[in-house]
Image (cartoon, rainbow, N blue to C red; front, side):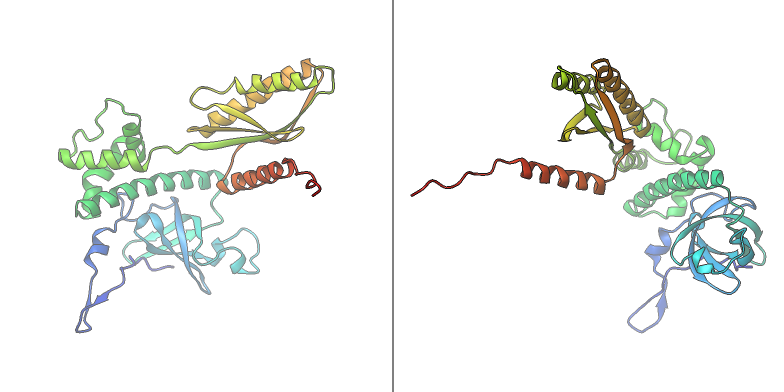
Length: 325
């Protein structure tokens, strides 16, 4: 069993060499949720700190880094040949709580009992809670407050009222008439500070959607047919998330769009491809989707831009021979 201990922040020493607590660090530390310890069968996010003979020692990220242990027998359903292949130090793991002894201070965890559905739910909940924690920690630091006090007056009441405080913060972004702070014991100045930072910190960021297609048409109207099909595809994009189609190298084209909603953006681009398909096939041409619509990373975009730059450079006209003197 793993001893349940809250990790203290490193002590600082004064000029005489005596240890003293870093008050600022302690002031800005707090668990995410109102319960001090997780419940049995709760799925939580843990960070591996050490690997021992009995299993892996971890800290529970949502519970102010209290310690727990993933028992060796609970790491995998299969026979374990090397524990290092299953868990690594400093890597986050999604685990299930199987035993909590508050009196003796033990938390035992299991990795093998977590199914894929639990993992997805845990990761979503953790990311939301981490965003809420980031907002409250910033406000506590800004206003010189204890983070735990801010959770008691704002964070945990919002969790109780809206099931998750993140959902309350989203109402701020949607600019509804609902006052999420109604009934909470906080002043107007603190409310405004939270609203201002939530709008800056949690505002949705545009996502780039991309798809690569090959469009060909060898009939008499080939070029005009391709142009008509691509323009029809571009017309599908809404005004706030237009679809742009660029030539990479005949017959390859790249479709891109910036949107705040990834799923809607992908569906819109799929409809654009269906429109292009319908038009080009009616003209005797064909389309081949090389890369289905997907959200792309900055690295993928950089690679695409480098490729376009190289192609543009290759297609530049080369100067002829210098005139004879």
